[in-house]
Image (cartoon, rainbow, N blue to C red; front, side, top):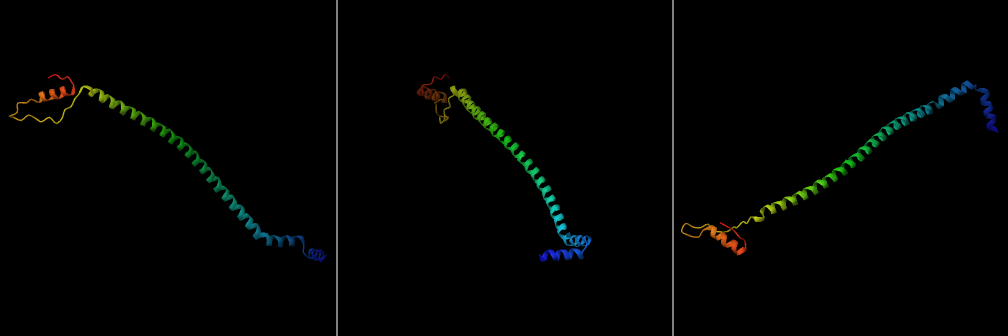
Length: 135
């Protein structure tokens, strides 16, 4: 009750304009801080939006690069398989071409006083191997 009397006494002494001026003076720093906080929040929001756009862009690029990487892996596997197949076919072809070729090594060259001919030696080796060879 004393509070109500004190408020009534103060209200009778202070006019509404004076009270408004006092409140404005006391609340001015608080209003300034609220404006500063609003400005900071606005800047933070702008930075957040910018970073979100960048993150979205990076995510899309990562997905695209992942798809390209998968495609390249598949292409590399296919190319490796083709290379292995071609290498095997090349080896088989080389073996086929050499099917009638016989290479004999280690036959000494005839000396000048030797009467033995290298052709005779090759014919004897072929005969021992069971291969028919003509001169």
